[in-house]
Length: 381
Image 1 (cartoon, rainbow, N blue to C red):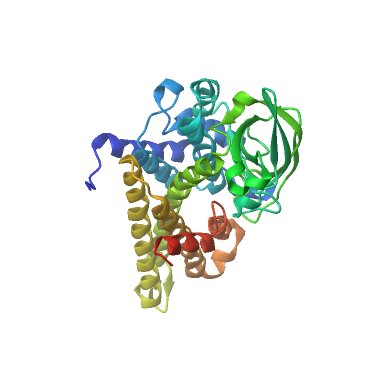
Image 2 (tube, rainbow, N blue to C red; image 1 turned 60 degrees about the vertical axis):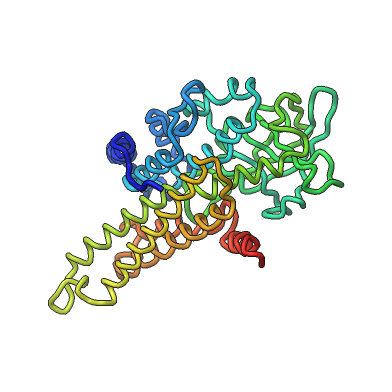
């Protein structure tokens, strides 16, 4: 594996950092308190091409490789502190836009990808239900074939981008008796009759991303909106989650580096007992652990991107990336609060928000416990 970046690849990350510093600076204390989607931030991301980083140019995207996409996302995470906005971008990219590129018909690609890739449309996906989380075989939303249409019926929970998405990848079963073999994916537009937003869900963190509950009541969609074949939903979902778990936390690498650099500055400037606190082993070792977590997380994430660029399966590597980056982000954020003492506990220093945002990464795209189970299975356990 060649670890060297080409000049063009390095320029992409540099451009992402410069763009975020200039265009993605917001009053996040206020936005976080309001708990509403950062619509202006989304428009600015779209102007940078972020909504279509890995999508081919013929569909309106930037056609970046996965490694360069990850670099750009890391750069955005480093210079933009709005973790919720970047989480919404990740859901849009990995859970809707990329699945359409991978599994959609040419007609579906031409209909949806240009708008999604340019950020004129926002994407999301709806799998989780009140009674079914990681257990996809327990999914209760049904899709009944009637001529050249399907009728969708059911409820969805924890739908990232649900309240603001223009198109959703919705998972339903065409035959409950078949368990996971009946799982099928559908493209549902937000104005489709029978699709209802029950409520936007308040959250502990990532408050500038919008998460909601959806209800499908006799929601009739054309059969041409089926994504993939009947019964192929589990395969589609598994491949979608492979990319999502491996890459959705790319911005967290930037956030971890940003937090670490802030803590280093604090350790150099803060004086106690006649010297900078960085001179105390308890502090310096904490900073070394931050650096260690960042570098190991970075290596794992970019190795995953490289594997996928080689056309290789990386299902369990994706779980390791998701597990390690999420746990590392949480610990680095907690350590930053501790290192800043009482100041770290104040809302105005914005470190407590980083903790709240990071904690969500241990839950979405499959909990840390689920990732451990998946990796254990790959080890024959």
